[in-house]
View 1 (cartoon, rainbow, N blue to C red):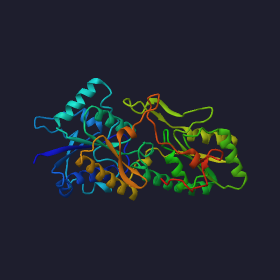
View 2: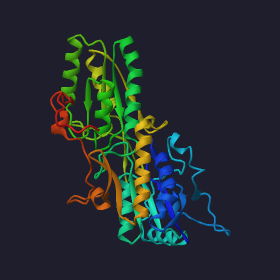
View 3: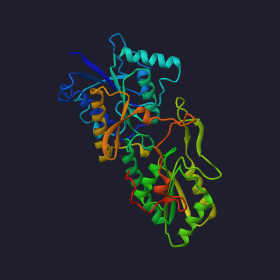
Length: 381
């Protein structure tokens, strides 16, 4: 029986949970018991550097291209679920950005004789997955984004580990804040969605949390913080998402340069420093700002991301085995399932991808800039 070839890739920013998903997608596809019932056999290759591996595939005389393609087997991936990041590497490459790129990518898929692709990534990665499906390429998606802003799923790989990192780092800052009677303003990731700052702030015991979904007024922030100081607060921790918008200033850009030329994301940052400077000018407390930046992406996966990586990887393998292409595995109401990629990558009337945002009415107090102190009927992240 001829073996069908499946390629696995990771796109976009790295995070915890990717390697567990790669491991279990590979093991699922190579599991004889799973495949026996459908009369199919598979071989698995890792596509290095995200979609860039397909775009830049350039085999030598022997047909190999170790810079972009890596054969995978059960023995190789055995310990991968213990590791953070992605052993297949990643990139922010759009292989369909130009007609020439598109032509080359599809030609390389044919050269590699790929019968299916499993793409692990967020909005940008799954947008490419969806576009390739529309061009007749069999693709299955696995959701990954620490921002947890991808539609169609209640969970995305990397989120739980990132929340845990935020909690741990706030805990470390708290000892210094308490020792020196300081306010610390902690900046987290979160371009459009505030799930990470909100849940990280809750876990870390922050006194104030600012999210992109609600425009904040710096004067209101100063009033709340000064009142806390007058009421006896010895120190405070304020958490703010990088994408939080101030009433007069709007978005805070770290640089005029783009984070990536392919998908056009501008680097955000500086909102924590702005708030810190504003508090310092009022002179009611000593204050420092800290950007957690890529600390949130790094390190070993938490038990949640190890287990979710396993569940999503196996589910993706099952979809391939069952030829259910054009879908993304997901978590819905605590069940592992799948949705069409069209549901994950929906566009609004302006052509922008609709994102999974914080339910402000249910989860956020817009007056006190903090998580609501009610939980009946609230879905846990």
